[in-house]
Structure formats: structure tokens, C-alpha cells
Length: 276
Length: 290
Image (cartoon, rainbow over all chains, first blue to last red; front, side, top):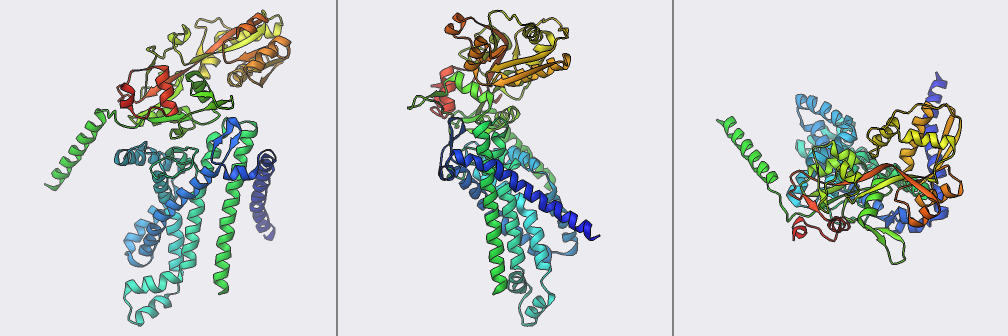
């Protein structure tokens, strides 16, 4: 039985190890031909002329992810609080499967929904082509909702009942007991929900490629197109050859490092809080 | 009563959106839809329309409008253009003729059709040529060329989205040859050549077709100096190449249609207008009709 557990764990570690090895083995040779500094800080992307600058995509990835969190995190957390402490049993019974369903919708379906409904809506309301940072952020916000809701709800439900009862006993109302006592106690869990959502948002590709316009230039205008790191890889992999192909794998390396850095930063912050 | 009121509201809304759809707003910004960098269709389009031009250093540069909507696939170009009345895009002709959701515009007054591509009047088209030094003498090369020009070969050409050059081509019968056939040249022709090679090998199991993509000029040079038994070029042969003995044969024609939404009243654009739109010099439909 122990062997089985060990084998299962090994599959997981092996997968992570192989992916990292593949990514770095295929991506690093690119930096021998092209300066890593120019790659990360360059603002022009013209692979057929051997100009590879992915700063617009790095900024783009953070831009849409930040937008998604700005919209998705408050909605998600408030929904989780509602489900854990305010809603009646029948309402929760409907909401739980609904949220789970939202998590199960394939990203290409989200993309199609965005392309057919959100993009024309933004086009009519604000002009332009509609494919924009705004639509990408809204779509991502919807996509990360289930992650944030489920994790936050679990965290809130895990807070010992004594916190809430103690607060009530001191004369606080139901609302202030929940918001001043229970939710702060659940904060680490809520933050990990947000970080998981952030991870999903920064890695999302299929839905974004359909609604973001994918312009490889610095994104500033919220109503104009943007290209993220993930989109850059998916978009051009089909026809890329030689250095162009290597540059796309190198884009993957940069994304990988960014995600790793976020994870480490998060666990570092969490550990410090525990120590305090 | 309430239901009736809601119903009336819904009807009114539908009427308003319907009216909005019917009237084409020419003051709208043109939504340029382009393929991604590296796509063969984009490569051909920018070359034939002049979107690709020499930069200050004398190198070819792709000047596609930076605010264009970049999508990675013919079907996505068509979906995007179909859903936005102000959009314009391009796609290979074969994928457009079977699709009613978009309208292809005339270029320089010539309709994008198979006939006009075959009679050389439609400007955004280029022949895919195979090149040999004089008439092919090698048995294997001759048989492979016979296959390409046969009914089965031209079907493969059509499957790849090209306009076939021969309509009533004869049926190909395998000659049972063996050996390796080296074909090289244009990177644009290489994909269809791979398809042809696979189909040929399926009929002649003892023949291996080795397709090398090096570029049109290298394809012609290779055919002349004997590196390739058959060269590939995605352009017409130059006079100097013909003088050196190169013989080109079109196996199919790559035609690119410029497409807009059916709601867009634009019927005809000049090649120069197409270029202006795709480099971003003209950004509204109203500016164009001046």
C-alpha cells in the first residue's frame, strides 16, 4: 500500500520534473542567440525579422490578470461569504452546483461566449473592435470566480464556531460578527483562493486568444487589444520554425519563471504570517 | 398585463438592434483582421498587396497595422469578420467560396473567383510552381509530376486550399517505381508538396518523397544544379532563370480573398486601398469612399 502512495507521488513529481527539464532544455538555447535582456525588455515583436521583444506580452499578462482580480476577487469573496453565512439552505443548495458547473465549463466555451456576446457588446457600447483588455479581464474574472468562491467558502466554514458565537455574545450583530471576526480569521484561506485564481488567470490561453485581439505592442488602452504570454505561444506555434519556434518556447520559460516567482512569494508571505 | 409589457419591450429592443444592424455606419473605425506572424496566408497577402515593403535598412518588413485584430486560423478570421460589420480580413479563396457568412470584395474591379485566378486577372494570387531543368528526364520525377497533374494529385492540391490548374485531369495509375525523390524549394509550397508526397507514397510504397523547404530561389537553383530532382517556387520564374534552362509548371494557384461582413456595402477596392487599410493609413470606411 505504501508503494502505491509513493508511486502516485512520483508520477506527479516526475511530470513536474519532465516539464521543467523540457522547457529549459528547449528554451535556454535561444538565449545563446538572443540577449535575454533584449528579449524581456524589447517592445517590438517581429519574429520574421529576428526581433523578439516580449515586454508587451509580459505587461499584457499582468494587465489582464490584474483586471480579472480587481473584478473577480470582491465578487468571489462576497459570494463565498453569502454562501457560508447569509444564504438560506435551499439557496446554497442551488448555488453550490452552479458554482461547480462554472468551474467545469471548458475554456474554449468561455472564449466563444466572450467572442459572441461580450465582444459585440463592448463594440456597440464603446466603439473600436471590441476585442480588448476589458473583455479579456471580464471573461477571466468570470473564469476565476469558482476558484475564489470555493476556496474562500471552505476557509470561512473552517473558522471555529466560537469566533462567531463569541462575537455575538459581546453584543455584535450578525453582520459585524461575520465581517469583523469570521472573515479576518479566514484570511489566509481567502488569500490562497485569490492566488489560485491569479494562477488560473495568468495561465489561461484558449479563451483569451479569442477575445483579446492579440496585438504584439505595448497595451495601454483598456479598450484596445492585448497579447498575453500564453497567447503568444499558442498563436504562433503552428507555423513557427527555427529561432522563431525557440523564441516561443523561451516565452514559455519566462511565463514559467513568473508563475514560480508568484508561488514562492505567496508561500513566503504565508510562512511569515504563521511565524508572527 | 406585465408579461405583455415585457414582450413589447423585447420586441422594441429587437427592432432597435435590427435597425442598427441594417444601417451600415461608415464613420466606424475599420476593424482590420490579420493572421498571425508566420502564417503562409499572411506571408502571401503582405507580399502581393505591398503591406510588406523595404525598410530603411533595405530589408523586407511587414507593416501590418499594429491595432489589427490578430487571429490564428482561417475559420477564426471568417467568424470575426462575419460578426463585425466594420471588419475586413483575408483568407484563402477556397475557404471563402463555401462560406456565406462573409462577402469577398472585388479587387481592382475583379471578382475573386476560380476563373479569374486561372485567367490571371485577380491580383491577390500567386502560382505554386514546380521547377525542372528542361523537361524532366528522370523516370521517378516524371511519374511524380504525372501524379501531381492527375485527378488524385489535383484533389490533394484542392484539399490544401489551392485552386487546381487542371479540371478534367486523367486518373493516375501507379507505375511501380522505387527510389527516393528529392523535392526542395519554397516554404509555402512545401506543405502541399508533403501532402502530395504522402499520397504518392501511399500508391507507390517503395518510393520515398523527401521534401525540403529552403525558399523559392533556392528551389529554382537546386533544380538547375541537380540538388533537387524537382524544385518548388511560390512565384513565377524570372527571365534569368528561364534563360538558364528552368522550366516551371503551375500545380495550383494560391488565391487570397479580401472579405467583409455581408452588411458592409463595400463591393470593390483597389489593391492600393487594400494596402492602405492593412497598414493602417486609412482607418475608417468613410475615409475610403472619398
